[in-house]
Length: 483
Image: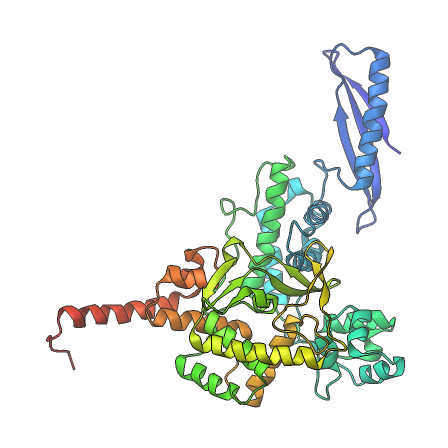
């Protein structure tokens, strides 16, 4: 219930102070909200009384709905509201889930500080803490020898059990292996799904460590985005996380992991012994530089056999609490057309023949139409035309691709690489062969040439050294070279 206090200044002007409370903070103190209302000149006493009651009701409703912010607003309260107003499709579903997870750590550290009192030193202390004792468990994992038995006892498939617990099927497959292990977060989800204590199901291995510079920078950027909106809402005069007021956490530049040409050729040789689906997936990574989600979003109508191009029109992702979703590519420039070699299209022709044979073989369970989930959570019935599908003809989980590549690397004793490493391999080999940066950037679907130049700075420098030697050989072919 709001309280109203009337104040009359020496000059005779009337101001009403309205105050109400909304629950308690983490320290058990009531959360107070207040506002002032000044009646416009010319209003009668009855008009003022009626309008004052309207203002009180409106203020109480705004507090109850969580849309009331003032000088007493704390960062955590405003941050939660900011995230809620940016739910998908405002933010990509995976981005939203990542921000939600980061805000848990952020609000634990600075959530109780009022927006108007927040200073750069508070942020710096938080970043130092993340660097020394980050909320992430580096090297942490969970193992269990009980999950397989529980699945059999409940007479569930691994897919249905995964859905029950809110994790991906690949997570369940991993924990059911003799040497399988999963993240502690996934273990907690499984335990919650079974309504059992996590320590009754899993053995937890925890190695506390600090977060990486890149992850700390992501926390900083999120805080800065929230404070930028707070300045637009006129709750604070400026954004203390802006570069004009503090330095962003330093991130050490690391060269993108990639295979050299010899290693890449060796991988292609090894793929000759692999199933055609996985061979085609790996070929597309290496010959097109496509992203993992873009690859699993490909449909046959996107493949132009006559002009030897593929069109990137959608991406497929796995999001907690939503499952596999279909969304637009990462940015506007990610909508693109990629020219591919005759070798790649020979592989696609062979795979299409295999795909059609599988469709006939799976006739009884093949789904001519599939229900896909979009980024905003809505669902849509579409023709089943995806290139890469599971055994039941439905879209693949992107994590299953990463899992297969990991096994492929281990099985063949190869240096560690991931699907994304093959994208970097594609770009690096092109730059080494003198392909222009704008061309590479367009193939990769980067938002700008600057992005490409920043990621592949070492490859560009190496190509530049080759160019300097090439021009000298062209202009001074007879010049004696120093021993």
